[in-house]
Image (cartoon, rainbow, N blue to C red; front, side):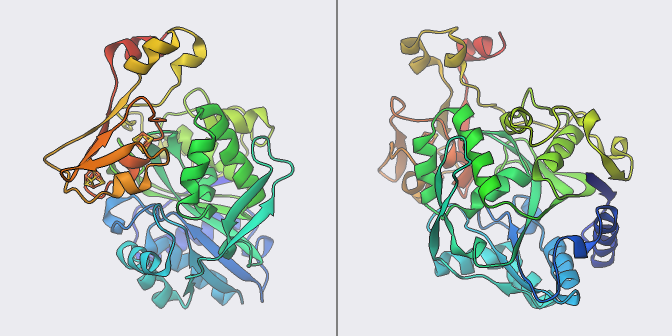
Length: 377
Ligand code: SF4
Ligand code: SF4
């Protein structure tokens, strides 16, 4: 069951009303959290950007949800592990820039500064059998995923299921990229992580999403909707449909269908709320480059792939030489020379973390013409 409700703005009364409607559609708050329980709102704080950039969950939604839960008798924590180092200084900075400190103050919720980690079993996982996750995601009674609708350079789309990758602490995320350089394996691993840290409820901020070069370098685009579902996979299938995507373009949707976690197509979803046609955006811009491993289809020999696969490029006009890309490159293939990043393309695993975490949107991805042709065959 997925509900889609009209929410034209982040104005407090507007978003609170839409949230109450959405929750009523899927059984009410009591179906997901009981008085006395501690609930973590697992927000998407990929990096320290203001709410107007549409890269992170909007604080107005977080505040409205926290208020409802507190009035319901719950204790509410707000937290995430953003990209980069996972420490209290970084968390404080990101909470401030994304407006989470104001959301907590306005609602009575608490910000989580825990940087402890835990290893948990993931015996049913397809790729991962154990996980290192944030303790904050384990030391609560319930987790609610409060995600954002965005495009994603590596995965094409990011929403509820991929939001749970943020339970992997800071730089440990890089290890997962290195361990699973193949897109198919990474998509399955994302589902393993989501299953192991399973949120009881997923709520999506699709009031203003991000199109183009998401998840951090794209442009805000109004969709005017709030989505909610007990199933992160069903929510993602519905949200992706609104921006013209299905399992053919989004590997996590394909994998969820293969693993019987969600229907294969939007038409098979059980829907509530407002008509989805109201929110569909046929010209929603996708990333300039959509990652696809054409070596898997055997069209090009591996030696030629090395030269034709997409490459990250740095715009010298935008780059300020901060070194964040080098510090966060999972494969450690970026070196700083004269305050400029230099990439060893032979060892680059095309995870696009450098693009995602560059604070100046100086990194883009360029496809060769051979790659473009091969990718469309
Ligand atoms: S993160 Fe961006 S601005 Fe910083 S060195 Fe890398 S490309 Fe330049
Ligand atoms: S250079 Fe960029 S795309 Fe390549 S491995 Fe490093 S972070 Fe990933």
